Amino acid sequence: MAFLHLEPRPGRIAHNRKLVEKAITVAADSGARWIITPELCVSGYFFQEGAGTGWINPQPDSWMKRLLGVARRRQLTIFLSYPERDVQTDYLYNSVFVLGADGQLKGVHRKIDVHPGPEEDWSTPGSELWPVTVDGIKVGLLICADTQHPEKAAILKEKGAQILVCPMAWGHKYGPGDRWEQRTAETGIPILVCNRTGREGEVDWTRAESVVAGDGRRLMQKSLDRSAILLFDWDMETMSPISKEFRVVYLDS
Image (cartoon, rainbow, N blue to C red; front, side, top):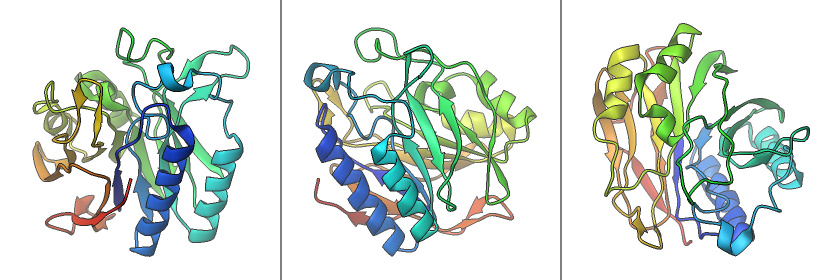
């Protein structure tokens, strides 16, 4: 497994795409087969002033198609946080896509609990919750604040989810508390939380933690002040980490 614990630059789409591509390559070269990105890793969180929303396309766009090719060639599953435009309604969504090792899109989750105000006033709330099957494992997808209350994780559990994968942009000042641990205690299934680092305006993510949690407790956690890959080994049969701590590979952002 690999968490891409990155520092995206707000509104600098081309720069962030290159950062994600580099991180995927390094993670794959390091042995990762599931690669998870943080929330809004391609745009940064406060991207509207610098980039607007005109660049957000129906998916898969040309860049995602390129990553689908990488996933197929390298036999990767990539959980890619990437905004999308609905081709029928023109609504915009804060989404996470599952890019399969066969080069096909396996599923998508549209963030339901969007943050009110200028942070996410571009994003329409999603409404559906369904696990996505990856390597025979039913994966429940949530994005950041979707984990704040128990209902959504419970729905995914009822629908057969065996693990939760969650891209995050949850900062330290208003941190998650023990919400992630609570979701695992309530559902009995583990949660993989890929957070980010860096600063945007007054928001500081340099102490934000990426976390592996299960059985009501944190099993691994790490915060970093610059872009890095967090690598760990996972047992798919027991749904528990083999590693005791993350192996960190730093990137130039």
